[in-house]
Image (cartoon, rainbow, N blue to C red; front, side, top):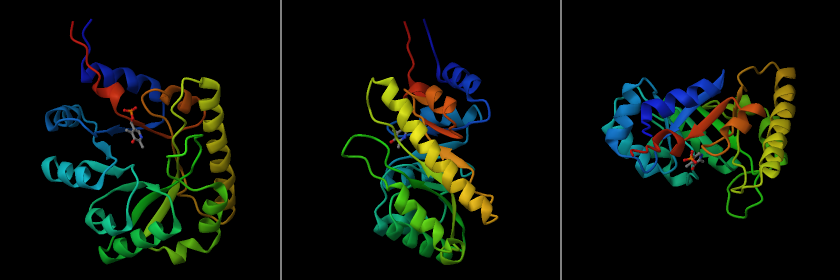
Length: 224
Ligand SMILES: *Cc1c(COP(=O)(O)O)cnc(C)c1O
């Protein structure tokens, strides 16, 4: 059996419905990414600032770049001029720095608050209470350089489907609560729930994901 990036993307696209796909480009070659771009998939994500900068330099400028990995405040300035969305905002401190750099660049940067939903110790993120505190605090005026578009979360790395599903449900629940709070305040741009990767995106879509971040399932190519 032979598969290709093109077929992988076609198969994934069939399952998306209205969910948006971000192709995770980490560890892939420029040629592979050019192929994805050539197939008209122009939304890509990196988890490291240095790689994001390298790819931005080397690939066409109409790619929409997302950052999905932990971001140190001292590196925000490097990506602020061009990044479309920072999905991995895990503290109010980081949000303040993104706001500052966005304003410096005359931009408004879309961000997601990363919520900790996994059982593992190593994953970054905030809890519901921290997210609420950020969103309650007249944030539209306080953070004029960012638009808080929604939430991002990563489920545990486990074979236990029941656990993964319950983590997605938990995140969707927090998202719905925050969304209705914001709707009551006439804020209508909170519309993104980023959950689901190669191994669990179909389940994530069932549980209400609006954006999936997929790497391996796009690039896994068998030639036999
Ligand atoms: C690597 C990565 C992904 C994509 O993982 P795959 O299993 O290759 O699809 C998604 N989200 C984050 C935050 C990642 O670091």
